[in-house]
Structure formats: structure tokens, C-alpha cells
Image (tube, rainbow, N blue to C red; front, side):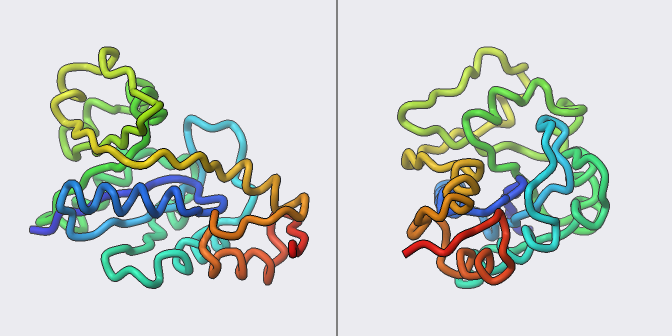
Length: 200
């Protein structure tokens, strides 16, 4: 049996915070692999991603190319519509019945867990790895007993990055060096994503 961590999100664009989160979870929880699954559309976010799905998938593939324990999965992009974790988890277990799956989520997503679609059903078939940053403690008291039981907390460094802020910097011609992998920045420039302007 393989233990697989799931990193879901828009990855619009993927940045080093995502990669550090995935590696922190992989090491702390002894995961065999981490699978990055870009969403088609998030049920908890009103805005559509800025880059098309094929670009976001390609950026993920570029970012993880040097790590054999990381994989990019296009399941939610191929399915289309709203990307519900319960649907993805059920499909993964149909395809890989001998694997165990854990969703890797940050403190903000832990606080959102009660709002997730059919989250109690989801907790019956997967577990959760919560990433706790030193200055951002999640509100665990609001979780149901099942969710608390299925949640393992992991410490990770405080990385103050957001894809929204990086898109703004790119459109303003500001440097994003060391905030996103060089391969991803090159892809963004090559395809003129986010109105990017070359920075010195």
C-alpha cells in the first residue's frame, strides 16, 4: 500500500510555499508520494483562475520536475465543473484501491473544513494533514469529532506567499525570483501569463 498526499488548489501560479508545504507533509507523515491536483473551479472561491487549466497544469509539472516523489494529476481539470474533493477522492480510490490518501491543507483550509461539500463522507475515506504555521493556529474546536480524529497536524515554516500577490507583482513587472521556481517563471514569461512584464 502506498500513502499518498493530495495537494489541491488552483496553483495560479504554483510557488515555493506550495512545494515546501508538500515536502513538509511528505517527510513528517512518511508519505510515499504527493500528488498535485489543479482544480477546475473551487466551490469556496468565487473567482475563476487567471490562467487556463492547461497552463496551470504545465506550471505544476515544471515546478515538480526535479522531485520523483511529486506527481501532477489532471483529474479535476479533465472532469470540469466545480471541483469537489469528495468526487476526486472517490475516483482516486476507484482507480487505486490499495492506496491511502490524505489531503494536505493549510490552517485557513482547516478552518473551512466544516463548509466542504459532504465533508463527513470525505473524512470516512481519506484523512487530512494540517499544516500549522507558527503565527497561524487553526480553530480546531469548530471541527466535528470525526474530523478531529482524521486530522494530523504538521509544523511548517511561515512562508508569506500568495498566488494573488505574485500575479500582481508579475503584472507590475516586479521580481518574483526565489518566490516561484525558475522553471515556472520562465513558463509564465514564455506564454505571457498574468500580463507579465520582464523584471531585471
